[in-house]
Length: 150
Image (cartoon, rainbow, N blue to C red; front, side, top):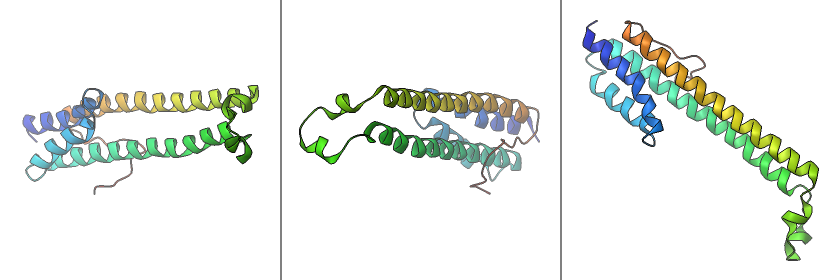
């Protein structure tokens, strides 16, 4: 493999970091690099698939976290509210929030925020590690990645 192929594969990994500057940059730029060179280099093709599968897996894990957290959050806010509270016109949120409710909501929010932060920190570290591996001529397979693109 050539130095150009190593550089393209490394840039494919590093292009995921554009998500911190450009929305959806972690998908757009790897797709552009990968699709433009996948037919010319098996190395770039393998690394590009790895990057895209990793980003799609991270998106899926984030969505699963949200799908679990939002209903639990809504339930914890409204579990003591009756239909009568809605129809009476009272300020039911303030009146029905007990100390136990607020504590549960705060704990849930902290757990979700910490889980999301943990995912982003691990993602950042793995992106750097993958780019170093590809610059050394290795195809890096991200851990816990679902192979959407084969």
